[in-house]
Amino acid sequence: MTRKILLSVCFLFVFSFWLGCSDDDDDSSADDSGDDAADDDSVQPDDDNDSGDDDNDGADDDDDTTPDGPPADPLLPGPDSYGEAALTFFDPSSNQDQPLHVFYPTADDGATIDAGDGPRPVIVFGPGFSAPMTPYFTYGSHLATYGYVVVFRNNYVVSHVDLAATTSAIIDWLEDQEALPNSLFHGKIDLEKIGTTGHSMGGKISLLTAYNDDRVKASATIDPVDMSPLPTPAYPSVTPELMPDIHIPTLFVGGSNGGLCAPVAENYHQYFLYANPPSIEIMINHSGHVTFLDLPDAVISGAALICPTGDGDYEQIRALTKRYVTAFYQIVFAGEEGYRYYLTGDGIAQDVADGLVVTDSKP
Image (cartoon, rainbow, N blue to C red; front, side):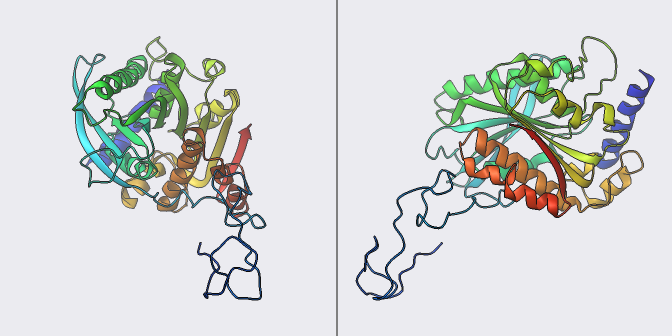
């Protein structure tokens, strides 16, 4: 117990410190044998027949002889613009109104959520111990460009059981908001596609919520830690005890240098070991527990006194994390199988070959 109290104090110190393709036609000649109105020349037949999906990524190809390749790298922003809004909801755990911050796809400079081809999936995002939600906002804006509504919360209460209840209360609130005609969310969110994501303690709460609430359909966590400040029912251990009863797709992105902040016995790998398939773990080399936050480099380096930060490029670490989390949700919620390239296919194989990550999966 003494060690866990020490770890909690360390976390508080760190975050207190921070708070201080084109087609082939090039002439007007008639089409020799293909499907275009005009060919590249009058000698070579047009090789496009546009009749199928060669590589099963969900999109039709330009021709059936050359696969169209994977979708654009989800490390980069997606096709949508994003908007954001500061809102409040009543949290029964703290018995008061509490702030939320929402990022969402938009086509009108943030005035409304753009529903695109249908209601948008929702991701509830929880911060780490003693951290506010603000240093994670670029994850929300990034996911919003891929069509996700991302709802951030703070840590309003201390009990892990209560934090999981708060996360479920946010889902309750979203259900109520979706039904209100004048709400930002009315007719715009898909309540059958709810995911939970979080960093550190927020990762643990994401999974504890999934254990308690079957409305959670997937969870992508960022260096989740199973530590508890006190061995009481208010701070249950999730792994290994609860993981066998969580039957949803999961992703665990982890740091290679956890130190006191993410000890090996309670880190992301312990969750993956006991997770049901399908599950993926990706350890980013040269990364530390606080390198996943959008903090100034100097603050992250200063935190190395308590939480080792590794010798990696902090911006690259966060970009890779966005790549993997986005690809995960694109597969699970958008049904875009081509994104497996970045999680279990040649894309991540290249990341491994480049020494960026180490990975494992349970199909």
